[in-house]
Image (cartoon, rainbow, N blue to C red; front, side, top):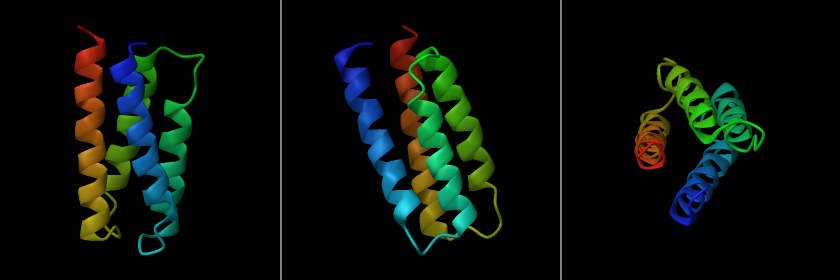
Length: 91
């Protein structure tokens, strides 16, 4: 994996950690953020597979009716960053 991609992935994981620790979002959202982080950290799988799995999980979370607006915004930002990462890796 390219250095920039690894750095970007680490930044995304850090934001997921922050979301997982944010007590102002419901527990299921925090748990989902932890699950998305776990998907990204599975080194046995290809990066594109890990990113796609995390995007799918985060997309489900963003559509949860109980999530506060700031949590949804963070999730959409993470999804956007993951999609950008996917574009850079697949070039």
